[in-house]
Image: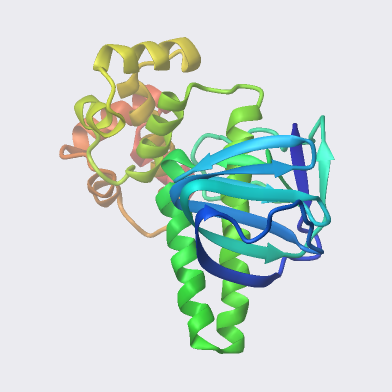
Length: 284
């Protein structure tokens, strides 16, 4: 089951810190608190009984306990974790209204972001997002130590960023076109590196997969090859640069990692049916 956190009125942390429990816990019976609780385990493991459910958590796991929900945590060894008490209504959501996939051909124009709820299960394994979330928590620690009002507000913003990262993972796992994780990772790598030369070897090394598997994923889910997809994204980027900057064609080709402006022009004409110089005049 998924849960929804209402962020339309903002989210504020009321308690935050780092704790270690050894062979036991603070309490021997279930209790509840008036605020939501998030536990991010950084070392060891623990067991949590939350209402009528049981959760095992270990390093890299996050557990979210809604306000006023009875829970009991315990460990047979040790568990080190960060915790946040935070505001905001959390409610069960069996059929979440998760926004549609916003993936699009490259454009500087962003889709409208109307997002008043964050969706997540109560237990989340952070996996590849561990470092992002841990960095947000370190930022919370630093700004909390500053003791300033601005730092206090940044702490709330960093916590909201953590919740949004968890929401992004949930959207990936629940969207209609649900690409395999390896394909998602390759797409993100390509979009982050459009201004660099990108080879199939670079892509496979970064994602730790074989070139044959990468090609199969692109063909099966996107009906294209890896090279064609990379070039397509770069060429859409080139169109936006023509519309929005004063760069000339040679500068755009170099900026996007093409060593040869003539090769860039050839690919451009094959894609759009006209040369970049004609497109350039049209856009201007």
